[in-house]
Structure formats: C-alpha cells, structure tokens
Image 1 (cartoon, rainbow, N blue to C red):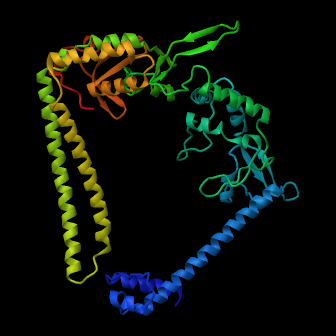
Image 2: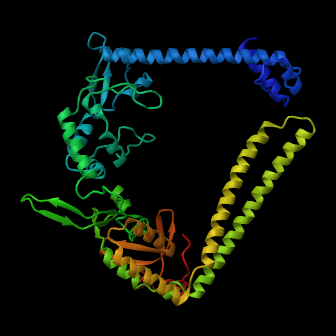
Length: 485
C-alpha cells in the first residue's frame, strides 16, 4: 500500500467515527482477548508499516538536511562563502548575516565577499555612543540624528527601540565572526572568525563591553538583592499616568579623585521610552526620591477616613457582588462541561465513536472552567480578607504603628522592605509624582493595567475644576471608597 492510499484509508476510518488502537503486545491471544482491531487488523498493520516507513524516510531527510548544514559551515571555514550565502531577497540565508552588509557572490573568483551597505553608519554610530550612553539614550540620540530602523513596518519607517540597540551591543558579528547555530538557536561549535568586515576591533569590543558592564553592575548599580524603591509598581506620573521608573543613589569618582553622591530619582517610564509621549520641555526631568519624606507623608495620611466603617462596608458589598458574578460564570462553564461529557457518554453507550470535535471542545471547556474556578477562589479569599480586616480608628492606629516601626528598621532589611511593598499595594494608595513641580503626593487612585486613570481626593485637581465639574468631584470624593486594584 502506498502512503497516499494509507492516508486515504485512515481518513475513511476517521470519517466513519472509528479509530485505530495500537496494542503493545504482539501475541495474537492478547489481541483477541482485548478485542482490538478485529476486522481491521490487516489494513491496520499495513498502515502502521507505511507510517514506520514514512518515519524512516523523514529521519533520512533530516540527516541529509543536517549534513547539508554541516557542509555549509565547512565551506564558510574554507572561505567559500558563495556555497553558504546568497544575496538578499534570493534566499533565506540572507538572514544569516548582519543587516549592515550585502553579499556579492561574483567577487573573489566566485567565492563571494561581504561589503558595507547604507546601514553601516548606523552600527558604527551605535558603538561610538555606547562608550558613554546606555541603550535608551542611544536610541533617543539616533532618533534625533535621523537614523531609522532597517525594517519598515508595513512600508512605513519606524524608529530604533532601546531593546534593539541593547541586542546589537551584545552581538559579536561586529568583530567579523559567524556563529553556527542549530534550529534551537544554540551555538554549534566555536564562532568562525574573519567572515564579515569588522566594525570594531577585539580590543575595542572588550573596552566598550567593559564600560557597559560597569554601568550595569559597577559602582552604584544594584548588585545585591534590595528593594530600593519601597513604592515599586505603585508610583505613577501625574502627566501621563504611566509607571514611574527609579534610578538608585549612585556614587561617582570626580577628576580630583573625590567621590560625589547622586540621589535617587523618579523618572517616567513612558517618557523614558519616547520623549514625545511624556516629557517636560522636551527632556526627561528627574524627581528626587526622598524615602523619609514619603514615609512621613504616609504616616500622616488620613487613615481614619480611609478605614472608616462606611467605606469598609461598601468595599465588602462590592467584593461580595463581584464574587457572586464570578460564581455565575463558573456555573455556566460547569454546565457546558457537563453537557459535553453527557454527549460523549451517550455516544459510547450507543456503541459509536465520539465525534473528535467533542474532545477538542471538552479540552477548551475544561480550561475555561479551571480559569473561572481560579477567579472565584481569588475573589473568595479577597472577600474573606476584607471581612476580617480591622476598620475605624483601630485600623488607623495599626497602620501608623506599622509605619513607625518600619521607619526605624527599614534601611538594610530586604525582607521587611518586601513586606512593606506588599502592604502598600494592599492599601489601595499610590504615589503620584509630578516632574514639572517636583511634587509627590500619596492618595487613592484608580488603576487600569500599568496606568493610573483617575486620581481621587487630590488637592492638585480641585483648583482647576469649576461649576458642575467641581460639584461632581466633591461628591465623588465624599463617597470615597477603597480602590479596587
């Protein structure tokens, strides 16, 4: 039987609602006792033989393919580049060499050679800037100098991202090396030198990479496990609502040999990636991170209002309603799973093979049910935690006592700083930073994803509201409840 005939017979078997079972025991007694493949034994065995033959043929093709790849790498080592590379647009092998080069197969008596193309100045400029700048700043300078990505998006030019710049600064192809790699992207042997025109020398590579590593792991960088920003992932920009990044305090040696300390700063992550998205007069402006002042501000926060019994009751009601809604969803998902299982059981009882689509649908329904069950479990735990939470003046005293105790032992205790950050998340409060005025405030807010979409009960907003907007805002803040995060 040919492979095509075998496949057609398999499809006919499946269309009839039947299947093929393969028994690991080769004796006829076992086959007869189990009743496996009674009237299809001959065809089934023939199909299995063809499948094994197809498998062997696939293995032979794989070996030939790997052999061809090995031959290509050997040709590269011997300098016969035309056997391994093709000009761009004519073969997938164009992906194997850098975007700043073009391949000319006719040169060197047909052995081929690589030459710089229009993107060569870009890679040279990136390595020049890497001596004094990180990836984000390099991307910004390249944007200002008019450099564009070599890969347009749907025909439109796009800018180089900091991530792409950092990736280029790790590639040793700038030294002229070609690294053989298998399909899993793992290196297959040592790199082959002298394949591409070098952008920088080995000495320059070591020097610049050393500078980069010093910036990443040197003096002032985070080398140990520390929670530098106590308010991590709860600090937001007042201008665009984006998360605030944070640079730690650094110490740098001056020309006279003395050391100078630079304080930590908040910087908007949105503006850091794209100045046009959030900036102050066209540039990033840091806001000092004063941990002591922030903790004192948090200590003096209006905790009595935050933990009032009215707000707590409203929060419990909202959490209970949310749980009930999720339980309804879970019930609907459970009914879908039960119906599918009943359909499968009915088919089996009638001696029919279940429709293969039932199995796929059941897997999808089971996954959806598990997701719904997890959501219910999370909501249930949240409701239980809310019910057991201390409220009123006792809760306010507890919060201030926690802050006072932490302010004494906060400096070098990583575990305590981690716990503090988790606790701050649970309060529903955020730190809002305005780089224009260098002002920070701690207040309740509404968060969607990684952005703050509404600031509640803030003195920043009130002076700018008039008429109905002012009245509505005052009504909203009067009914302030615990923010759902």
